[in-house]
Amino acid sequence: MAAIANLTIDAGSSFSSDVDVLDNDGNVFSLVGYTAEGKMSKGYSETYPRVYFDITVYENDGIVTISLNPEDTIQLEDGRWVYDVQITETATGAVTRVVEGIITVYPSVSGIA
Image (cartoon, rainbow, N blue to C red; front, top):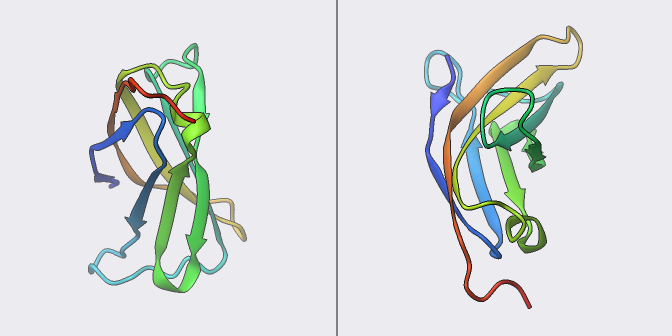
């Protein structure tokens, strides 16, 4: 079962969050041989556009970092979004959702420079 984590993004700012991937015993899960993908959307239906996170995988540390740059976050509509992050075992194609939740996007007065 995926962990639940609710996050916030300030539009026009850099966004980054680490996802600690753990095994069933709570130990660091090796991500050697895995890829990761994460996205957010205004809703679960496929009719809603998806925003894909930039992903960095720290294989030996069991960490997936999701991020967006200010040019991306300024484009986000304020309010509630849903998101998830999945890992895929490259040898078998098995997909596991590791985290999901709500992202609240707060609007920007300043925008980006």
